[in-house]
Amino acid sequence: MAIEQPLTQRGEQTRIHNIGYRNYDGPRLGRAYARRSLYSQSLRGAYGLGRSVKSKVLPMLLFVVMCVPAAIMVAVAVATKAKDLPLDYTRYAIVLQAVIGLYVASQAPQSVSRDLRFKTVPLYFSRPIETADYVRAKYAALASAMFILTAAPLLVLYVGALLAKLDFSDQTKGFAQGLVSVALLSLLFAGIGLVISAITPRRGFGIAAVIAVLTISYGAVSTLQAIADSQSSTSAVPWLGLFSPVTLIDGVQTAFLGASSSFPAGEGPTSAQGVVYLIVVLGLIAGCYGLMMRRYRKVGL
Image (cartoon, rainbow, N blue to C red):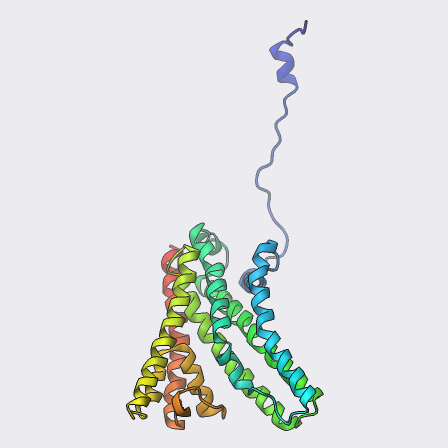
């Protein structure tokens, strides 16, 4: 039969450990380091790096889907000894806009919605990081991720064109024009995706809203342009392109980068109209940044 120990013996076995706060004498890395860390973490997260295997599937799959058509075009050009690529560098992102839209719809909410849902944004601002640092890091990270997504297939096309011994100067010029086009596209789409996603902490709602805005706007503008063209109102076709992110990028590269337009009958904007397109694109990018600043100033209070 077990004999119960006296209470005094039990008390003698207890220990109290002082695990209170201790002074930190190491280096203070400050806002710049915090901003770089948030940018790096957000960029990695846009491709599922550092997260679960499930989180890597969709972004990596979309990246492969973006690059495979470019590889096929290169193979065809090499096999047939073609004198040019089947598709211009500036046209590639426009043709694969659905894949790009799906990517931004899936990754923009992932970047910001979880911070809103779990109320971790005020914790960021309790450190040296400020509202502008958070917004810039998130914006730059998603724009960089989208630039990687859209520029990688152009690089495949460029390398393949050089291997096929196509004209070096023409291919280099086209590649540079394509990079400028996808850089603008990445900034515009990232801003739109983040602004919409920052409205709701529910990731599913954010995904649906981004897809709806990008898809409905493009479908509506394309339909109205086709109707205007069929009614011989060709002068209205370029102006209708101002109301969709995809047609905005299409108009800018048609006016300034020598790209062929996907507008009905190829009626892209003139150089004067292209200035308006560029102003609208830059205004939307600045507006998205401003809206995010206002949103997170309220959230961080």
